[in-house]
Image 1 (spheres, rainbow, N blue to C red):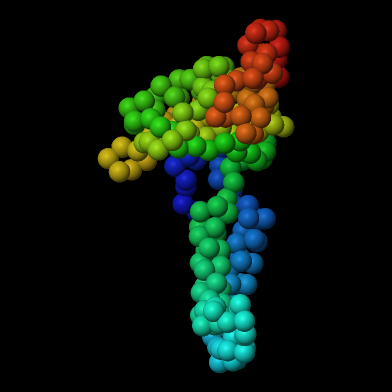
Image 2: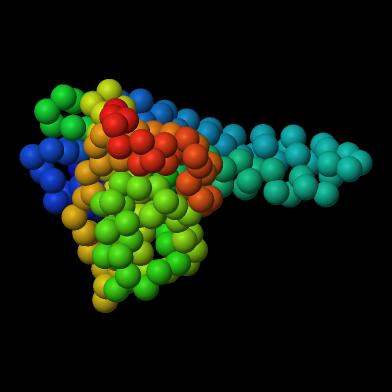
Length: 212
């Protein structure tokens, strides 16, 4: 299984509810990128003399870059393959709910401008479920990361918080958001997590009879 991102690390504290699974689409894309990059690099090396010859024929404005063509194609292929390996190792998995198999969709993942000892405060804000408490997220360089995830078909969402302590990431418990908290998070625009909560997002907390 791929290395777990610090933002996803809290999910490991709920093994009976959430599990990490490999995403077929992400895995396929990573493998295609690795194969294409490797093929490009191999063909470039095999035809290096031809690339040099073609580049040498360039005239005018293009002539200044002719010495970079052959090595550039090789480097580009190697870089593409390396990036594919990186994606395969770090981004080719998803999380799903054990009970239903519903995949979680990440709404946002952010580094927060907070020291490690304030991670619990951020988690407490998520646990209220009220977007007026946790928005806007204090995005910036710090020792805390957080994520907000939704399983729309199941009517449940999750807030994750991890803190960097002595050089390693420590997960906090997961905030499970249902009913009003789920409805509120569902109403936050994808570009709205750095902004205060909108009236649509807090409607469920102003009307206690609203349920998801």
